[in-house]
Image (cartoon, rainbow, N blue to C red):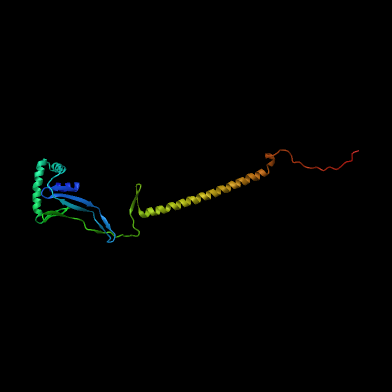
Length: 209
């Protein structure tokens, strides 16, 4: 039964045991202590309240887990609670992963079993590499940096080539226009009037009698 009680407590954050009370777990997230440069691990604030009432949901859970009727489960749970309370009056009971339960002045108290703080100092590493998944290909961070540097250079090269091609086309266009103008200078008669140019002829004067 102890295994089922532990599973129920971890899953629903509370469990009721006759003669002992109701144990509740209140989760507290990890916290960063900037001044001390440590990270306190996640912890639980454990509370014990007196009371022998066992919730119907807990009885149904234990009945399904143990394969017994609810009244049988309640009787077994009552016996388990009486034995546990006797142990609490002595050395206490170390509930693995939950904490140490003791009887202090007729009241049950629990000391949570927590994790020790760990250092949280910032470390800067030079030339550190890590793998990056690019599509279906796995590359290192250094390769990704080189790839990003290659992209601007390729773009600049393409731009320079486009500018050169543009200037060459412009030069050919200018030469073609000059060629057309040059040809048109000698074909004015073909595009303009077909009359011969007007000239002046000076003839010698004759006396008319």
